[in-house]
Image (cartoon, rainbow, N blue to C red):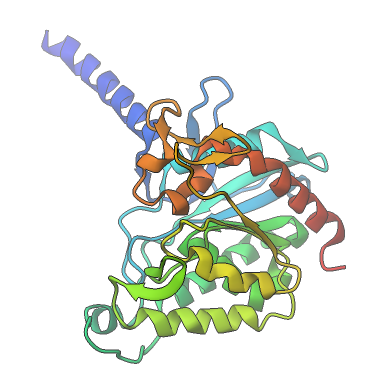
Length: 318
């Protein structure tokens, strides 16, 4: 009986882990993510290698973070990867296969997070490098690493959500020669800054706003920014306060629909998220406007994303 149980228990644990991972478990390692063609589950490979690099398109995914300047607990959630892995599984661009590389920077933290981020009553000038500064440096280095493998830079794209999207905008505005372009979902990184569409810091420390403004100034100073950006007016982290992005030359700004009486809809399709096989409505999420990009309805925009990638590879900055 003991021998039988020893054989059964590992099997049970494997099944439970697999179900949890698919339904929304966390992951903390960098690597390539893809969807298994046989069972639809998301798989992961840590090997940093690219076969036939000139025939590949690299999508570098930069995740959000739960705390602006400290280390994070998780890198990505598996349910966030469903739409992205389905996109690369079902489509090629110009005959080239797309690879999704998730870059975990959860281990990074700012030099002054203890002094600045624990002070909630007064503003303290930041000393040293912030976590965002370090994320930008690490992502830029990663693009160089892919280029050293032989991947053409006009086939490397930065994708991300929230703080990851914000980091990508900073990179594209300062080091645009490093990559072909960026596809960004709900860029934001400094807490709840909107209330009824009005810029207003709520619930966070004073040090956030100067760093946010510093980032905005850097991004605005870009002569042109050929990036595809998705936002939502219900996003409490930026939402309507992100409209300044519309002023930047060559930036494509797409505002996804706000909530209706019966929930969120895109192109008449109700937005559902992974809970149990796409059965949970998006409005059940804590921040639906910020996470609509992970709902099944968001696949409507796949054609926009694919068209953008193709044009950037073909024409670049010409």
